[in-house]
Length: 493
Image: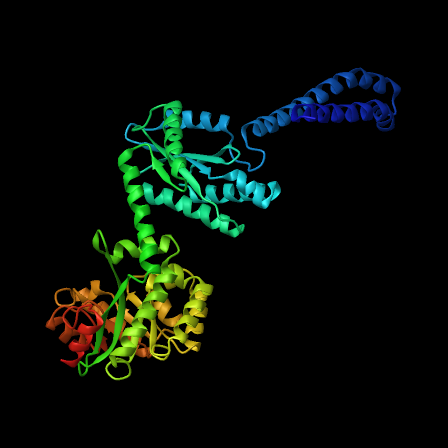
């Protein structure tokens, strides 16, 4: 029985029940309420008219409500609740007509690779659950106000206008990452391909844009697990980014990433107190790649934990063999990404890995940016407490840039804070920067927290910090990041 038949039967049933009740009970009710026979006779005259009016209003309401439900059923996908292809095309046409002359729009198709094999491996019911889960997460991950639809069994689509500041390739890659995460949640390894078309470059009508996106998707499906823009320049950028991810994975697995060390000094006697370990990537074809490029790439693709372990392993080996630990160096700081820090399970695994490195177990200091700890102060407190209970110490980097620095000092039991270089660089010329640095040092001392000034580049900055009572400093004036052999020579001299 289809939806139309069911809806008609529902309306008919309600009408029959109402009409039967009216016929059976209306006369009795009128006679019970009105005792006068003449008045009863007059009321009976109007009772039929009232029945017609009431039933007409009731039928109008029921039919309108059921028609609305039918329209909605005809315009949405029964499984996921997303728009279907008909409503999607109408909405796209309306959106294009509403666009201002300088506005742009993106239309994207996502197709699951080898969906038939997924059906066979996990069963149709479980595959349907996966599609519903993907629909929910795609709606949350797309740009605010996007229209998302299920076009075919294993194909989704979305569109929305976007501004100049949007990194389209990174946004689309983020959708692909979410797909990978949800599939792993369901215990399967699957990939998806995406085809992207942009208004007005690739088309000015719904049909032109959809043809362009379909063409791009077809090219992406040839290689699978690919992102293809109809615009060739953007496709080239996406391919370069994807190749860099592959190269980074290889560099991590083959331990091609290297580490360098930047020394820290106590200002009272300018004796080395520790080092900060920094990771470097010298690509075989492209040469040196800045951490500002590959570290965010690693975070987006779930590689930050592997990099952290590689840095710990290499620094443990190199520093252990150098003879510097416990002699020239008392603390070794390793940077941890915000995504890794805010995942308690990943931090526990990293902590256990550090404790297996005997040379670093007693002197390791975890360093995290201030903004990362501000995501969830209660959660951060728990993670830091677990670290410290394991014998590790904790440092907050870029301190002063977050908007709740005071609350952090009050609530988090950190061992060290590092004053952001943006303040240190201005203390010679800017009274406000000096005031901020002075206040940070005073507050930290009152909480018995060690203070390190970052980015010291001149003797004048060093003297000013020393006069303020800052305990430690690091920067190019004291020592640049350097490989282990240069660190040994540097500290000997």
